[in-house]
Image (cartoon, rainbow, N blue to C red; front, side, top):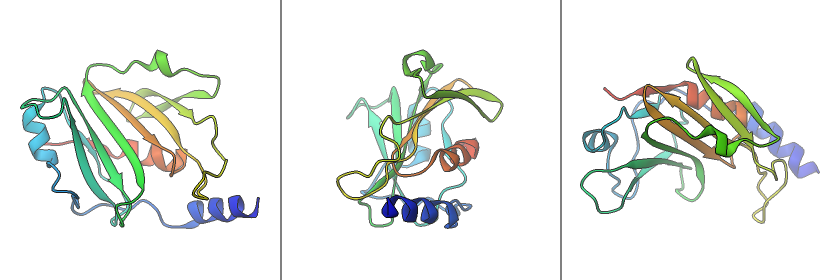
Length: 168
């Protein structure tokens, strides 16, 4: 129980989200600009993420010239923990498939979204880390966006989501 309290206090009282100045890519990742050229829908990136996070972009289908969707994987500074994943694809999100008793409607940049916390939220995983966060879905300007995290709380996920801006 003490470990949970310490983890919660650390999460909520540590300055977490700051204005990102430049994207730090890892693993020779494709860049956001390159992705933008290979999809036929608006691409969004968060303006607010911790400055020590790195980004790796996964594209689907793999080894194709044009992509149907992609995922932004924001990793911790040591590139060992996925902090948040953000999947984007053309069209509207399928919010209905994620409705659960713990789902709630949220506002993301004047768009209706759904946030659903994990069923085991608040428990400690096998590595001793507090499970938090959940699944956040919304559609913005014709792009379906799905964000997930088990390492950052709902409030921070919403702050990151609300900072998502289209890549010009």
